[in-house]
Length: 151
Image (cartoon, rainbow, N blue to C red):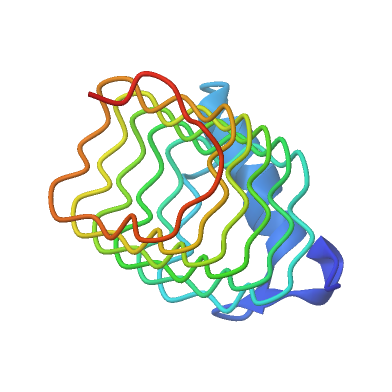
């Protein structure tokens, strides 16, 4: 599993990008994390704060996102296949067109998330909060577990 200090995006180490993002979130300068098209395959992002980060079209396949804060994050068309998002906060995140095939979303908060046209085939949704989530056109074939809040 790749650690933060081992990952570069557009010539900058991921841990530096995330430090600047924290400053931005705290209103102390810095800048919003722009990880559009980032290769985060098999990355260890366990517990990282990616609130409002731009992860459009990012490759997060097999990533460890356990307990990660992705509140309001842009994950449009992101590849989250086989990613572990157990206990992750995806409230109000944009996951339109995202690939979540075989993803673990157990106890994840997806309240108000946009999952329009997302692929959730064989995803584990045990106790996931789907209250107010947009599931229009989403592929929910062979999902496991019992989410709550689903219309």
